[in-house]
Length: 512
Image (cartoon, helix red, strand yellow):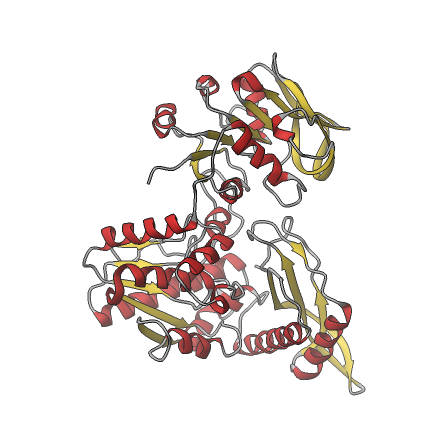
């Protein structure tokens, strides 16, 4: 299918995939490529626009990632963001140096509304800054179209060559009018019409899966979460009974979740799937005994998952492919190209080196969470499944800080169930994600006139659409009070309940 294309060149920033997500939200297809992508390849791809990402380097450093100057002469519109803006300035003769005052967080930007980039944007607008270096002098011919009190070139442009740059990050939710700015670039500068639709993604993916699999057998890692459920139905539409779904109950699921997953995908459910449930809770608890380091826990859980799948594959005969519900946030946070590793994901960094399958299929790898939900709706999956709360591959293993034990799992399962019940009974909707986690902190309390020394449960609730950025949800205090009272009175081993206010960034949504 021929479609408009915008390319994101990744210079090592943490928001590279998020930029692509925002462009796709404008109904324009977008791909992320490393900055090492050759100029001839870019020409052959014939993109409508190019976006340079941010990155951790100083552009004037010896090992700083660069791109050949000729890219600016292609006539293709380019938008540089953060490091990308500094790279554009540095390459074209401007001056980039260490800023007298670094900017991190929200900043008020004064914008020139005559710039096509700031069409319909407020003259004073809040943007997200994250930089130590800055452009002290724009290249010759460039017009400075935005400033802050400490950043003389918050944005610059050379309209006759379709070159634009912002020191701030328009792609993050903290930039209040960031979507307007990106939409202006995509439509007003690049001239896109917006022909990227989720229906075409689903059709193309089903077709490509059929071609790849042929008459092979496929094993799907089914957790019952949104990602693996959409992946399973997608594969089922493509290859039918060639697919076997294996559900591993590792003992780290939410309360009663194993039975709920089986009710939906098992033999009595609405889908015609080969479904196998493997109950191996104690196996995982034994492997995790004494382990406290988060990355080690993730890798242990990830490896045991694969080993279980290998064992099941041998029982059902030769299996050619393994399917996983990996999505874009998994990839970016596990480290893409030169990007820093935030945390290994069960679907990505937690995999062992030797996997006994011909190939791993990840049909959702290019999608963000809200796009996965859209794909699910395109596939006809019921809303109650599509809108299900996200749940990480390592499960409660990363919602329990420190060592994982059966008793700690019981505590966090019960506390989480209470939290969910109270949120539902209060009629609160629209939360991006909410759950209870068990901290490793124990503190003194008093219950029934007796001293206690028990654990603290942390409640988490965030609002987010893309799961790359998130803000703490404002749950009514009386609801939090009810949850606290019930958890302390009903869950043995807990004497303290806290509410986590941290946004993402700087925190992550999960605890480990």
